[in-house]
Length: 334
Ligand SMILES: Nc1ncnc2c1ncn2[C@@H]1O[C@H](COP(=O)(O)OP(=O)(O)OP(=O)(O)O)[C@@H](O)[C@H]1O
Ligand SMILES: [Mg+2]
Image (cartoon, rainbow, N blue to C red; front, top):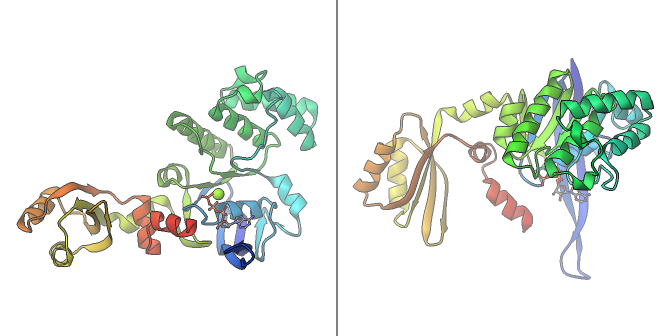
């Protein structure tokens, strides 16, 4: 059964751009007609670069933003017409938000939010102990939130979100700002939460995170979903390929052409930085480092760096969008 249904959901923003007194209104299509559905108990990831529209999608589902057009429902409740019911079914954890009171301790925070959720004190007492134990921070119950580490604070934020026992949890970049060990532990927690039958929609920039956690991933770029599938299938779409990366100060169009012809390669990207060419190709899996070094010596190319990699998120991105994430970020910053 689908617990979340999203159909051609869109949200545009306008902002002013230009010189003082000559500013013009510009339309930003933050979310531009996304559609997907999530099954009960599933972990589903929205993966994409900065400004792709991930948070805006989450905020609309959490009833914090009204959509411009399209429809979405959570457990059959429309996010616009039945927003109260939606809020009873889900909780959202957004990054960088002051979702806890720093001058209160962990126990006081959870009691405070419990009362906002309309929960009975006896229920909160039992539930928060269970949650702190689940996250392994029961010894922090009397510690002020301001004295917790980022990872511990994130676990309290998750405890707060799980206090009303929601069926759906929306997590916007849950591992942001965590060190690798804390991020691994949090990913384990997310799997455990899903193991309890909760449905999780999370956003991330990291392919490996989406890969490890989710049963399905939607790659979102400029407000549109560019592909949606099981992580393994997404990788398989490029799995027939390896990525060759060469850095050299001797490269030209004819060498480029010979490389493409010899290895039946696809040129992915070529740019010049610090007097050096950085060239990337997609090639068949049978290609070896020896083949490349032979080619380079035959053509008198000295490489300062060379690698033969499995496709990364960026490679999937280039394939699906025709642009690199770096380019996207420079473009949006500009
Ligand atoms: N309140 C707002 N007013 C105007 N524009 C906004 C607003 N919120 C978001 N945007 C714009 O909408 C686009 C999508 O933003 P969003 O926060 O959804 O991206 P994101 O995928 O979550 O990015 P990130 O990975 O950086 O968190 C961006 O171009 C952003 O500048
Ligand atoms: Mg975001």
